[in-house]
Length: 316
Length: 120
Image (cartoon, rainbow over the protein chains, first blue to last red):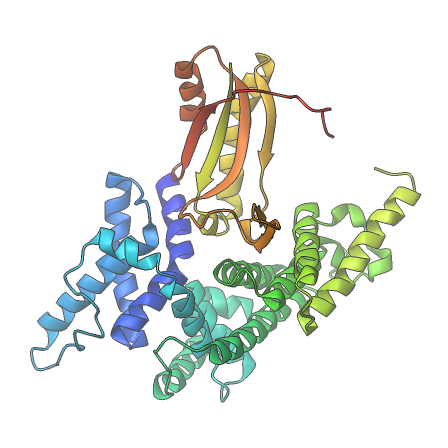
């Protein structure tokens, strides 16, 4: 039972990087997803026996890539395999793969994976749904329940969205600075939409939608780990942390919105608030203002005011 | 001798833990620290914020301030315990009880120790 818990977390954590790398190798989203799926199944068998690998993402990429290549060879001899330069150094070992991951190529891999979910022709809710499926690895059922629609309807939406993604041209070359910056802006907007999809819920919906906020924060932190000097990604992550910190005080027992001034500040999550405040300050040091930083700075003022008010009341 | 037990793990993995998993890990660690405290052997314990909050000041002609943690390592430094142990063997025993399903604990003796003012 404990085995399943840590393996589940390890697979979830490694998924964006692993699927993104497999997508770069195979240039086909379905193949990449299937390869990851197969590698995950093998991990479930291997890891409880052999213990966790040092680098689960590298393990999954290596095993997933090899199993997908085997599958291609087996399934259709007529199908031409991807060019050797696409599947770079096909004979390399797992340790070579680990070294390769250190080359930072995966930053752009993960960004690309998030970016292709942001097809401009797709409605925002579909972009979010498909990102939750592909990047976060949530099941269709989990996504459907968060969006309050039937599983069949959500499955259909995701299939449609994936088709649109497959048909669009995505550049697999390493993006230049301008293109990278544009991708970051687009992806940040999608993550914030995801957050708001969870945050704006009220009443009976609020409880089931918390995972959307948590997932958005996880993606924000992931992006910030990959691009540690991006002030707007700091701002975005801070904004989500500061808002989510107030989640349990935002609604009363019957699910009605409680206004900021009336919220029980004792219910605010201090760890999230503190993390958000640090990120706001970190971002400001860079001196490159942006809309997320601006909104986060306003949220920070409210958070600090709350502490001041508490001191005034002599509590704590 | 005082020993520092430094906790390393994949930060991304901790952020993917379910609430149940988080609670299980915390309960296990609290059981160990509770015992150490009752034996008068437990010093400060700290959990670090995510590495995304970290900044690094590097010595240079003018100190260089960088965004991000000091080292880009596969496993990140996430927290620490300070424990009083009679021997390395004893310190390793504490670490063995603390270690989880994944990650690593570095056991390292303290050369000097200044207790500070007991921050609250």
